[in-house]
Image 1 (tube, rainbow, N blue to C red):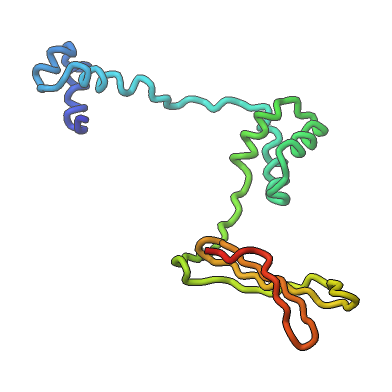
Image 2: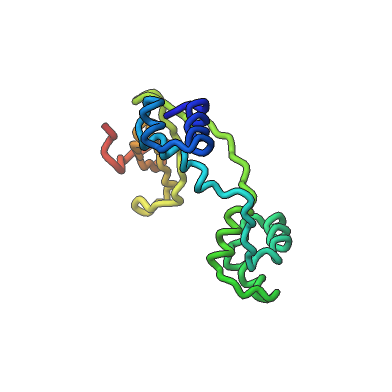
Length: 175
């Protein structure tokens, strides 16, 4: 990579003094390709070019207004609305414009919970209605524990029988 001073000197020697690329390269101690790149660098810069006219240019105020009011509206639905207003272009072209014009949703702030193995678990009880035990109807509950790090789950179903709590493990304990 050459600096701005060297780039300017190469261009001066080539355009003002009419030196060849090989002569400039040997005089400045750079490679001939470096001299050619410095000479040709402005060749592909597009300055003063006019933007192309699009079929959607007439409909841009309408598209902006609809997207401001309904930011999640699909481009295909917007395409149908534009077809009714006389647009005869492609839906692909409309999708490109909508992707640029659609307002970006505000990022939601959240805090990701990070725990070590065995550090935390979440516990809950659930009610599962009634279960028939013999001729008696008993309430069926479930104790569930989920470990935060591994997401391993342990569930135990239980039903109240008289004053005792009868417990039947539903799953083997998590290891």
